Image 1 (cartoon, one colour):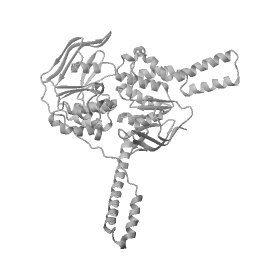
Image 2: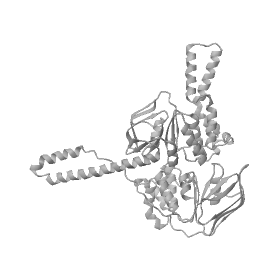
Image 3: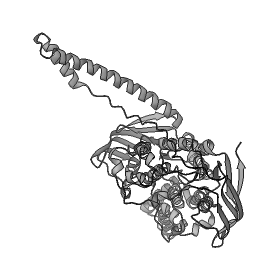
Image 4: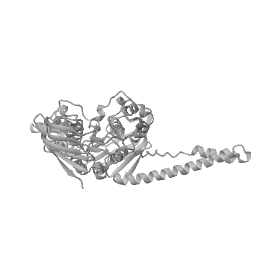
Length: 522
């Protein structure tokens, strides 16, 4: 039975039509991914399904009693509320049903056997069983552990959590509620490899429908069985995983481009005939016939092909052989020891991926390597001629909100790089008048893309990148990856994107248990 039936959905945004005539059906155990270019309306459609965005046309029908939960890219606010309470707030309806059952049971024990009481008890029991039964608290605890939180984290207030931890908390809250329709917008952001693997298995076993948006190819291939592509304001359904979709979609686009080319040639021939014989009386009927034929032609629309840009970092003098050194470093937060007697030597040309579960100190190590955070004991030593760029996990929130997109990139960029600014912005989905938007009006994802673009224009011989691919679409990831492959300096990065680690790392540093162990990649 269908959980959702959408008929001819329409949505406008600031006078522009995002999509129109979108129709689809979601069955109970579907695993559906929304694909399409940035700005096509994928997140808007998720929010529309969740009832958070109005419908400008068409109809959205939900199976009666359908429970819906959305995990989007906006984490909860910092608050004194502990994680346990926040996660369980997503199951408040189940707690209410359980309370109702206890009340009814007490009434029946006291002698209330009216048909209405028995009916209410039966209906409440059915609702709870449909949502997974009486073990919803245990399920919530399992979800929290699966996403990398510890038992100690359960009593920590949200105000002590990082942005990435808050995003994971939002995901835990949604998964713990086990809705009939699970809506996930970029669920793998801020998950380490272990948590991503857990989430893949969780979604495989999930008993209800899932609709998601993700730019993680490995994750999509492992989880989804259908792709709904939002392109040119309409939706096209593809059966299979993401790799299957790429092949099918490209074949469809090639056929569409061919049909467009043939249509354009035919229209040009007809117009040429009309222009040539317009004033010849003997050809008047034929000219009129062709004019009417042109009026009936529906132009075939083809999405613009995104230009593949290749970019080289601006030149910078070499650093010394020793780039950065940490000697007998100790770092603690209260009673929590992150590193103790840590020794680390970074040499020129190293391409190092920091790996390890969330919370073990990868970002702390990056801040110490960058000099942004000082160790409690020991020392950090810079090598000669070090020119460093550090891309922090919260880089998007550090940007000056006043300048425009273009001004943000032009400020501080070498003069010879200024002609590249437009190309770089295009590679990160800023085109046309987008470049004149002020940073303050950009979304979190747009700010992250802008921060990555700015980094590419600044000269350096050492790059420290903490999760640079969060919020990047697949094409923008390729622009960044290609530039980093050709980067001639020293590279240290944190990424849970398996493709990135495979392509870039020549060494792995495993962070955890108060230390950092270096392994060469073979």
